[in-house]
Length: 324
Image 1: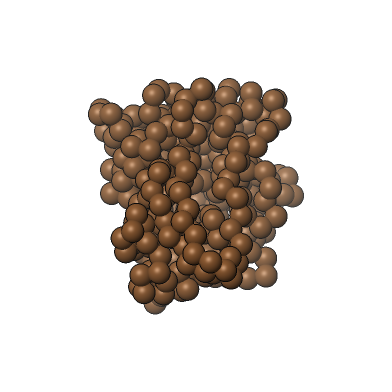
Image 2: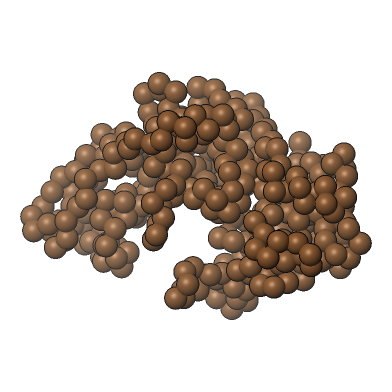
């Protein structure tokens, strides 16, 4: 792109931060260069200076100076397999005019990335249900984590839900099966985490000096001797791979988490490469239109089988940690 352009924010881009809008439209534009363009006033929104954190609204105009790179076309709805669309709709746990709660299956990425062509973000039109706006992601789950994922059906709902996650008024409860048992039955781990780049993709590690603060509360719900445990996990922060790294730091890696637990994340006599046993069991959050929304997702099949194998009592108080 060698000339100034004025681009319009689409409905699907409403409520995006300005820096994320640029990342979507110009994926090769570095953050440092964008910050310089913002500081010097070369990027403007509706004719005014703007900051990277500014939330955009559909219909606004963004002045984009010459960048020397081409802008891809705005994201368009793509056709998905009718069977996959129907399966997504079957996984809806809750739907109203403002929010959809989906039981995301393990193995489905939420957003695209390197070597990730199939992801939920590209399939959201299957969950439009004839609404004017396409559903919007307001938080994420790892590809291999199953469970409750909230989608906003309107831009105001997206703003309200995003604020709830940011202000920690949304409470998230996870269930995990770990190999080994923490030394205490109840506790809190406060261990800063930092992202590390590597040849095999993004990795997170404890870093007391440069890491971002990460806090997880845990409770042992049930155990199979010292071999394995069923943990209820309440993250107070939402760092990438936080629960996986924190469980490994407790000496009880999540079953199937070969990335952070290695061979210690495999049960003797079990599968050589088990699926990750981390499940977003429930979310409790203020509803965008008032009141409280609380949604629970049933255990996926692979965790049901492990619960049965390990003898965990499903009538145990696994949901007791979800604050009222």
